[in-house]
Length: 493
Image 1 (cartoon, helix red, strand yellow):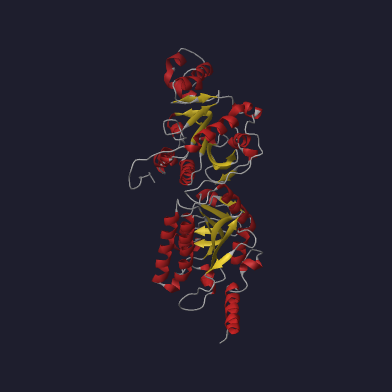
Image 2 (tube, rainbow, N blue to C red; image 1 turned 30 degrees about the horizontal axis):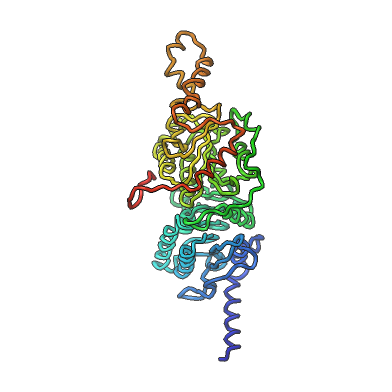
């Protein structure tokens, strides 16, 4: 066989692999094929495929059901794998996982993010124990790159069983709210086992479970979200996020912040402070009494964790504490400064919250802030009461700079409760509660008193929040912290 014949065979083999399992439901429903998804994620013409000729041991499977390779996003190296549902339903098998694990390993060596595009019915039962072992290897590989390089999962179709667990081991999950379905045990299995119907993550259920961090209405929009998310993240744990040119005046003040009060939307405060008002919110549909997401200050990425007064008064529920704790820990992994906007007067008061472990979940948030070594700045916008304030990046928990607005209330108890306990005798004497609460806010809970005691660093005018925050972050850019030697911590999970 001469060279031309060998070239012909090679081209035929690659063309056959590129066909996958043939025409797919993706194509019929207007979606993208596995390769088109990978190519759409990456800069045009940058995708380089690896392992296209891999097949299962017991029969031909085009690329063994997963397209793997690398390319660039905004000129930066990114590794990608995209499951192909036209090949055995995208099921996970021995060679399939071997390809994915190689991508993980290369990403770790090169210090580049990994994006997995998931569309799988689960493990290949027909491969028996080999498939079972493969799923275990996938979990181990995902764990090994955690905190080393960003790992993002896009759930664009089925994501069942082991694939669902692998997705949740990544840093962020982006789901197609129309076609994405993420579950360990599907509705039919649950109904057969329990007699009850159960929803899966798709068409909005992720808002209840918190399994997805972002949702969009099409493959293309999910991919666009992934590219935007990557723009805020560093390539690895040893580098910093890219600093973009900032056209927004660093010393810009905002008169709009002077009128903030009541059950306001904290996102409006954030928009007034960050560059160009741009804020990429994480898990916006989940635990709405807390707000988390990415923004920029003077072109540099920051993570923002905040209370949301417009939802349940911004109280810390168990879900809100978990949401913020995971976000803070991610930022700490990848050298992203954390800015908190605090307005909280307590933890949620409900029997259901206590039954589901509010103390344990609240402790996670306390722990996340305490262990974080990145620059930490806290802006106290409104209430900062008791242990709920401690959980929101207090000075005592390690915040580097704490600034408060003049209307802030900093005290062990909110004014209503504080008056009831401290001035019960005056209430019995007929003193008006409103007057006592006003006096409590102006004395016991005054930010000026907190500043006098060194509990906070300064009281600032709301309009000056952006320049003061930018100055604090610039000062903290060279922060260094030496931890106590230990194998690892024991976060209250």
